[in-house]
Amino acid sequence: MTVSLLYPLTGVALISMGFYALVVYPHLIRKLLAINVTGAGVFLFMVAAAGNAGAEAPDPVPHAMVLTGIVVAISATALALVLVHRIYQLTGSNRLTDESPDEKS
Amino acid sequence: MTRMKNDRPVSRTTKGLTAVAAVSLAAILTWGVWSLPPYPDHVRTLVFEKLPVSGVENPVTAVLLNFRGYDTLIEIGVLLLALVGVLSAGPYSAPAPGKQPRPILMLLPRLFLPFIILLSGYVLWIGKYAPGGAFQAGAVLAGGGILYVTATDRRIRSATGIVKSAVAAGLLVFLLVALATLVARGQFLQYPVASAGTLILVIETAATVSIGAILLLLFVGAEPIEAYPNRDRHIEPQNAEKEDPIK
Image (cartoon, rainbow over all chains, first blue to last red; front, side, top):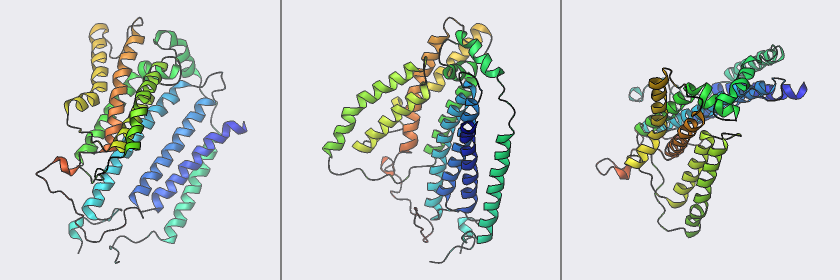
């Protein structure tokens, strides 16, 4: 019982830590890392839930979903990194501001 | 350094409130974990019941490529879309190629690449019986490619025909198989039981090549500026106020 709760609760901890970092840190790459930590928490939670089926083999469906999720997360992260770099190229800033670059004095 | 108007650091109040929100989130989720109903077993039972007709022996591969083939088909499409997005965001300033040959570094990919490709093939093949399959094999392949690119400073041109066909092969073969089953059996992605194993292997082989190529190109990014002689060589930030990119 305690071990079966350890993994989903670690996932819960990762999700909340990712949420905190996502809101608090303005640096875009830190935000991206935070989203990835949250995602890792969700994956851990799902795999742990699949292992708690109480049978001889874990449920393969969440495993397949997590595998799909990891690939989508990697491609989204790569795209986001390129966009962050583009923002840096265009504005010289590594964070989002409320105004567009032309309006700045 | 003067800060931009809306670029204040996060205030202590915001930090405190966020911490409260994060702890509450953790508490709610923990309560949710605690009061989860017993794990529903019918999906798992169904997968193991239908495993003999899936054409493979590893249940995860059976779910990925047969029972929920749609997911994987769309997933390869998502990978391709992400690559299109990365390439169309324009080139970014890649480090200039090393001027001096580095013999020891050059030796590394020469020694390891054949084994990496062999390992990738093994991981692809074993996916039928044990953990493994197209995504893991593609990731191994991409790792080998990244080793090659970083060690030798060779450029991967994303616009050449061979790279384009490697990138497109996975989705193309998957779609062709899906359409063939639609024409032959009237159902999209419903493999005939006798040839399901072969079809899955064909799809996975093409997907491995594509995933390896796409992940490698996601790492490499668009071609550097030197590939476009007519364009400006440097994109300077338009704002003079430059911040440290890794602060």
